[in-house]
Amino acid sequence: MIKLVLLRHGQSEWNLKNLFTGWTDVDLSETGVNEAKAAGKLLKEKGYHFDVAFSSVLKRANRTMDLCLGELGESNLPKHYSWRLNERHYGALQGLNKAESAAKWGDEQVHIWRRSADVPPLSLTKDDERWPGNQETYKKLIAAGEMTIEDCPLTECLIDTAARVKPYFDKEIAPAIHEGKKVLIAAHGNSLRAIVMMLEHLTPEQIISVEIPTGKPLVYELDEKTLKVLDKYYAEQR
Image (cartoon, rainbow, N blue to C red; front, side, top):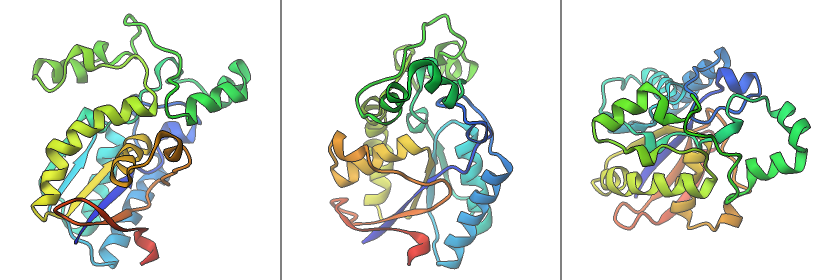
């Protein structure tokens, strides 16, 4: 048995402002910084150690990982970053206020965009500065061969997010677990829900009701050979 820890980033500056964030690269709020540090202190108190950590290419997740590992005294372990662990892309909703969006399109429609597994929000166009293909971070990743222009989403539903997360999990994260390494994944609500969906073999209908709170380490006890889930709990509960 081996433990895999999933950590959703702490509150971001745009979470605080009630804005749709998605792939927008915003930093942690003061509360988010405290949440990340508290997660590290809790894991240290519970006796957790890690061999390798994975995160997205977004700073709110990266800082959460760094602050957490700093509290553990494990800042120098190998860290891997991938756009495939980014938050779900919220398309044309990115940067908009959630309450104002509900007033414009209706509570029910915004709820469907936010909570359904297979209905994406309104799509961007490729001339929009919010499209990743127009942003320097992703231009560099494309030039480095780490993604293609076709990988840059105009919008995403949760199923789309899961489809891009799975290849990375299978190729990079699962082998580390199979090798017996203790893994930390610091990422986002929807990319982590995609991993939960895979680990627990949940249907799109079942994953809708799954929520992962910010800054609370979620622990999976796995069979390192089959990745079968043996137990699941939040670190503070054990």
